Image 1 (cartoon, helix red, strand yellow):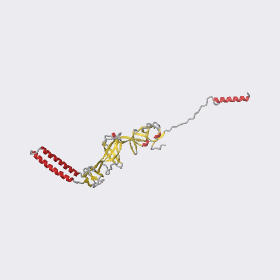
Image 2 (cartoon, rainbow, N blue to C red; image 1 turned 180 degrees about the horizontal axis):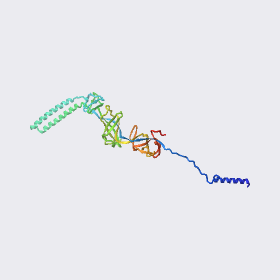
Image 3 (cartoon, rainbow, N blue to C red; image 1 turned 135 degrees about the horizontal axis):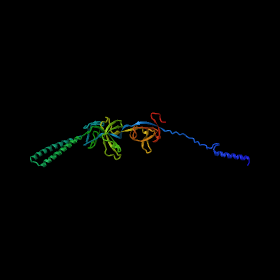
Image 4 (tube, rainbow, N blue to C red; image 1 turned 30 degrees about the horizontal axis):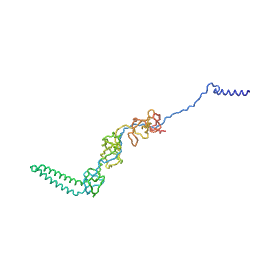
Length: 358
């Protein structure tokens, strides 16, 4: 091997040893440096509002309708031709007013016969009574005369009633809602003549679900709003003791003793029956949330800036929002951003009056 090859071989060996040892002149292996990335975790910002509970009245709300206190269907109690019709639809009448008049026909003649028979039977009875006292007539004959007298009196009463029945009289104060006859019509006994409605007082009727019926009490003052806009006040005066088998609800009636002059019956109505007074929070339905179990609640922020989930119960609803219970009297509720945070999570709370959440 020549000299030049020996020099080259030595240089290769020297380079190999240098690579194994790190860098020349250092007895320590080079320290490895790992770059570090600084991560700053920023808490989610949420918009909040501080609010306090208020006293409200929990109500049972029932959809119903207005009905008149009384409805009377006037029917003929004898037969005859209608000679006079004294009322028109919508007319207000008093109890005792003559609605219509039927023809007398032979009723007056029958009345005269009945009166004559009664006079004759009375005379015969008096004569028999005197003779019986004198011992000139038996007790049987006296009793027979008394029976004839009673029969004649009954016939007289029937004849008088037949004539009175020709006058069709209103039995209640009210309004003529409908008329079923015209002058000249022939009516039979039992024919409907007219319908009278007494709306001097109103009944607001509705059906309470079975789960709420124990909250309703007789005499409870209730508010009623008719679909026409009138707001009335009345007392619960009837609660059914048996549920409707189809709906499992109970009929109730609220009596309105002083309805407006133009009170309409048959219109829809909403009945609000107060049940109890309690403390509740008014919240927007938009901030209501469900937990993992599907329980309805509200997310709030505690003093440690942590999200807290409170289970709530909706006790009343209105146009401004929902009244709920189950949360502290004073609370900081999350009004914006609640869908992006979970219970136990740290957040940055920003009051509604401050800048909007970014």
